[in-house]
Image 1 (cartoon, rainbow, N blue to C red):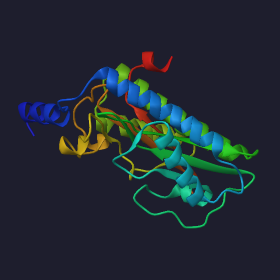
Image 2 (cartoon, helix red, strand yellow; image 1 turned 120 degrees about the vertical axis):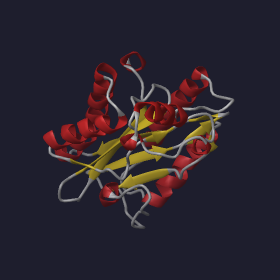
Image 3 (cartoon, rainbow, N blue to C red; image 1 turned 90 degrees about the vertical axis):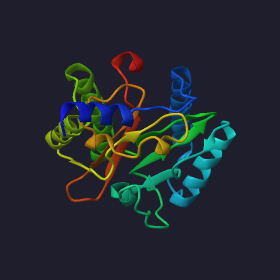
Image 4 (cartoon, rainbow, N blue to C red; image 1 turned 45 degrees about the vertical axis):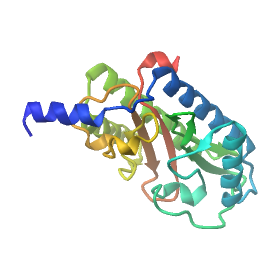
Length: 232
């Protein structure tokens, strides 16, 4: 692909819809992050995963958010290794020392939110480290993108190396994606990991899904790709 063609493809992939507004996108993000915290606070050992999903949906509805463009997910224990498009094993119950993650994609008015984070209950240090590392890899990759002007491809290569250095596998079945005023899929459906240009802020979701090499558990973190000032 020549330079002019690449430039056109990059611009096309980063188009927005007629309702796009920075304030709207940030409001959707803020409401999404708050909903993650509210859902996590209600997850307790002994809860079955399906009940946690139903609870999470209700939390979003009660917050005035619209259940939007991908299913609400809460995954416990051994289900935390599965790609998002793969159904959870049914009937998994959160144990006293366990790991879980939440993945939500609500809509606030015209704007898409998307967020995910991992949490632990009890005192399993390896689970805690995995959850912490998912967020750490996210921020390391995000800072490298901001400081080095990495392409989407280079951003995920960086993230893979960061994950490997910490002893985890990076799951490329979760390669990041566009986000916009709803619906982003009408604008662009390609992944961030395959994006040849330098992704712009406020346009992409960076997804980090870590898995233990023996595939017994994993952790997830995702958020809007933004500069440091938004994380102070």
